[in-house]
Image 1 (cartoon, rainbow, N blue to C red):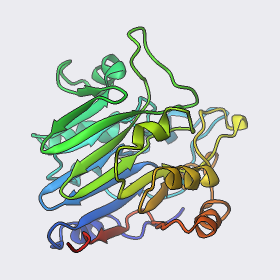
Image 2: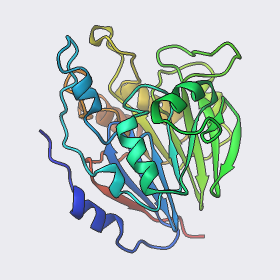
Image 3: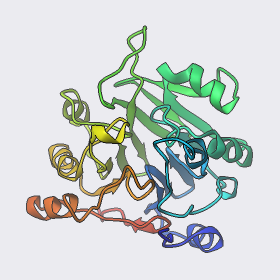
Image 4: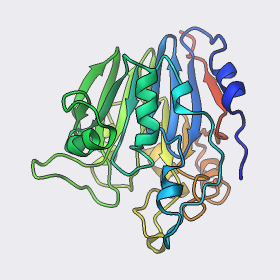
Length: 283
């Protein structure tokens, strides 16, 4: 089992230490989960902080054997204003993570693909009206954070009977920062045009690839993630969606890092539980 860079009390002490004004703090929580902080605003992106999938698939032909130990219990994360779910796969919409997280943060708000509302309400047992639904190219200001929906293909662009997307990524604008969290996605024709109007400071992109033999929907691989980062002009790219489950992972050294060097793309490979602090550019 991979030991996090920091976990539990050590992680929380680092998280709650004073930060530079207007800096962007980024903590990788494993899989596609990130905690972002700028000044007094804290956002959680697609957190998975339980062993629910390991338990669910333990006696099946697709065991989800955890590779990296949990960084922190969800109920210990406080001062969270916003949490996202990009789609309803459990590693992106986990009741065992979200229920204690919501209980520990009474004012928290949640953004979801509008097309997934019924399943979200059922899974986390919340009021039907409570989640804030978005669709491709729709946008709402939530707790002072502008959130834009960007369609994702996992593996296809899937829509419901009302034409709303079941899989989204999100662009978030808060403080002086613009970040893009793709959720689970492959490249698709609408993706780069939808992001063309943003100046992306940080892009969080999956690199575990698309291998049908795994029996699960796929994602960008490392080379494709670098290509997307270059196409959208991301100033920094951080890979994710690996080192959580043994059957569905990748090594950043295989494709991602060499392609970043080849294309002169700035990147940061984080360890689970690591906190990165980015300073805003001087004006």
